[in-house]
Image 1 (cartoon, rainbow, N blue to C red):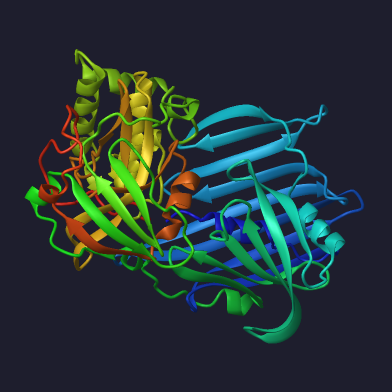
Image 2: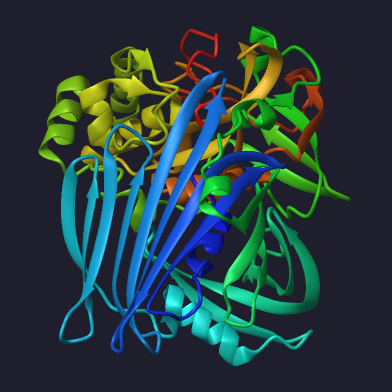
Length: 504
């Protein structure tokens, strides 16, 4: 399970009050069940403030526990000027590190280490962006008068990106914490442009210390609340996110139905505008009142479908397509294949057998780590297949969505979170799924990304709010396009063994 943007937004704002040294503990809950703890240490001198945060988070996926740890550290001047940042996270067997240090010229030298491979680059600090202390100071400066609104730019050390956040001061409220009752200022932060779908509610004291935070997470209510060390370190409870994210199928999706275009009528609960994406294989029609018609069919070029971007061809810390090891493996697998379609088919077929151990204990591994471990779920399949394609000069991207399986984790006839790869072949995007061994009409796409986990997580925010009302066979879809030559709907295996990697 990877962290959501909402979770990071909470973390980046949890800074205790100004003092020489302070320690704050928080308990972490999903729908009232304890799943982790957060410890915050803050040290201040007359020149700088250092804030360290350690989040321990325990989840369960079909009776398999996954323990995650994220460590963040920011160094800032007493006025909130950024001086350095550090992030370490464990989402697989290897730790992922980010470390940034300001240079004399004001730029940041940033070192990223993912899957054992390191790279260094320069970062020009975004105008107006703030780390933890700068965010706290800005909150206090703007005040807590009810109805006050303003914007802030929060820098995320993990993604090395800035989130523009709309802030609303709701008012003062009496809040029950696990061990106390406090009168606090209610603040709502909403990611700009998200139409209120990505938000964090916080309750802070006069110093801007967050004492309680609530955010949605994959259909759950995630809460962090201040308490003492004994409370924060109390035993965790089991919460199975994968089971909660499953979507019941309205009918059995038989092999004959899956091998032809399908029209879905899908309702979305809550405020999630346009959760489905348009691709060469998927067409979306908004019906109103949270109802969507989603047609999934063969890949044909569409007017207006954007072609590859630089993100679809370039290596990144997770998709290490420039690695000699990735390049050598890709070339060996494709051999003398005469064109990109045949190359993708050979890569897909190879990976279906190469990743030979389903790793429910793997959160999100890079391409290089998966080459070495040969272990993972659908996300590892998608990331490595994308890296191998890019290593051969084929534009490729990771698709996030849901897919049908007959049985999974004790459930029958359900759609589960999933990831697969799309490659740009000639003039269209074509899907390849090495985890399930084939792409079919039960793959419903929610988003695309370059292969890093943060974009993946953003697309999965609608999980827990999807209901598939109806699935109609191709025989009644006279307007669906005719098939084209692609890997779609080709290949054996409908068991779904490689599915459900979306939140695993």
